[in-house]
Image 1: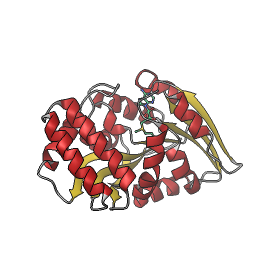
Image 2: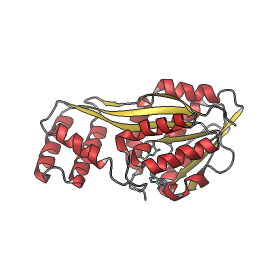
Image 3: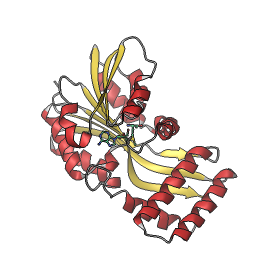
Image 4: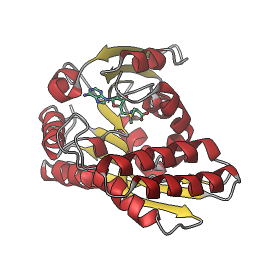
Amino acid sequence: MSGFSADWLTLREPYDLRARNLTVLDAVAAALEPRSSVRVVDLASGTGSTLRALNPHLPARQNWTLIDNDLDLLTHATATPLAKDVSVIAITLDLNSELEAALDGAVDLVTISALLDLVSDTWLERLAGAVAARSIPLYAALSYDGRAGLTPSDPFDSAIFAAVNAHQLTDKGFGPALGPAAAAFAIARLEALGYSVVHGTSDWVMGPEDRDMQTEILAGWASAAHDVGALPFTDITAWLKRRRDATATERSSLYVGHVDFFATPSATR
Ligand SMILES: C[S@@+](CC[C@H](N)C(=O)[O-])C[C@H]1O[C@@H](n2cnc3c(N)ncnc32)[C@H](O)[C@@H]1O
C-alpha cells in the first residue's frame, strides 16, 4: 500500500483528464506520430490514469510498462480494456531507490502524472539526468503549482492554503519535497540538459455539483493543515465544517493549479 487508494485515484481521474493541457498533449502526440509503434514507461502509474488519457493520442501499436510500488494499484491498471495493439505490463519498483532500473531497455517516451510535487530536487535531478542520458522525451502532467481558490471565501482559507503549501514541502518518501516548485525546477533542469519544453496549466476546476471531489480535497487539506501544526485543531475543524456545509448545499466552487509539460531532447533515439 502506498497511501494512495484506488478509490481516490478513480475519483480524481475524470478531473485530471479534463484538466490535462491540450497544447502539451498535442505536442506529445505530434512527437510520437511518425513512429509505427511506441514503447512508453509510465512512472508511478497508480491505477493507470495516464495510460487511459494518452493511449488514444499515440500510434496504434503501443507497449506500455507501468511502474509503481503499490501492487494493488497496478492490478487495477492492468485491468484497463484496451485496443488489441496496445500491450501493458506492470512492474513493482520503488522509484526512490530503483528509478534507473525503470528506464532499462528501449523506451520512446517516459510519462509521469501527479507525482513531481511529491519528490525532492535530488530525485528530480536524477530523473532529468536519467532521461537525458538515454535521450528520452518526458511528459509530466498534473504537478501542483501552489495556486488554489475557493468560493465562497472564508476568513481561514488563506491560513489553510499556507499550511497546505507548507505540508507540500515535507518528505513523501523521496526526500524533502519541492511541492509547488517541482515542475518549474524540472523544466529548468531539462532545459539546461538541452531539452525543449512545452508547458501549460492543467487546473482542476470544480463547480457546486462536484461535491464528492471537493469533499475529499477539503478533508485532505484539513488533514495536511493538522499535520503541520500551523493552526489550532478547533480552527481547522470549524473551517472544515463551514466548507463541508457549503459543499453539501451546492454553494462551493474550487480550483487547484497544476502544470503539465512535455520535454524533448535535441535528438531522440
Ligand atoms: C498521486 S498518485 C498518482 C498516480 C497516477 N500517476 C495518476 O496520475 O493517477 C502517486 C503514485 O505514486 C506512487 N508512488 C509513491 N511513492 C512511490 C515509490 N517510492 N515508488 C513507486 N511508486 C510510488 C503511488 O503508489 C501512487 O500510485
